[in-house]
Length: 365
Ligand code: GN1
Ligand code: MG
Image: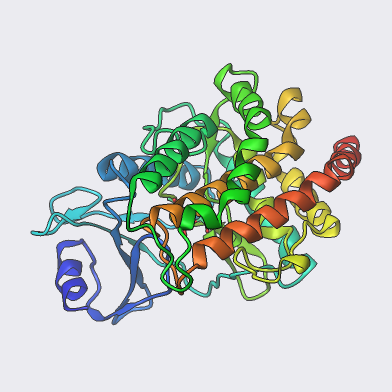
């Protein structure tokens, strides 16, 4: 904490800082709440250098996006510059820190407790995409390959090779190598490879247009007010120009499942069609106006694509020995992977129904 207290003095905060305290349990960054003698509070964040290879580019992207939203009268946090006039401070250990305004009287949710929240979340993602739809600037590709499934397959193959060559690759509790333990899951990955590559090619070829997308639209990355109305998107670390379909898909992964993404009782994990419908209504009430025909056609499958990708990423991190995602207990990544696979299977069984729901909503717009 001492660290954070000192770091905050490098930023242009006009109020008197009274307290800096750790906030939340992010998977990736370390976050602190900065309280001041006035009403305005700030968020201070140590950005994860091993996850984000280009933090200056990332901060530049965030500034472009928040400035665009503010210029259109929208609500968002805004970045606080350092006394040197940059959007990040680099400490003597080489760590990068960023600071931004805290939006008062807002809350976040880990999982969608009711249908109104699901619908409001849909409006939030739709509004974010919609506000950025006329952005004419260029964002840096700060996480190359983030939702590129071919890149993920290369990474996955690398992880498998490394695991095969690791002699110490033993699960502490039962002595079975992690690779043997997950062999059926590896088959589940490869069984869907071609289908996922076909979808990615639609993005690569430009059939699905590139637009500004958030790329990490799970529920906890949006702020809500006390009436459960959505306020704005947060955690803009991954904003890039990919496709808005990934934002829809990632949000469906998060909102349509009545349980958290690491729910261990697999028989309870499902894509709930009522939630899918509520989210889609909210999303399309804000976003239908700018989506083209191809985007509409491929919207439903994006949920399968992103859930599959997340299944692969959690599994890969388990095989790697838990090096990327913060875990709360041994085997957490494996539980997450299995849970995401269960969700994916539920989506696969309901794809025609999802498409039907979307067609009905499109007909009303
Ligand atoms: C990470 O940063 P956070 O916790 O919002 C991850 C996402 C995953 C998500 C799964 C940069 O998101 O891609 O979907 O965990 N972010 C990064 O919960 O890898
Ligand atoms: Mg994030």
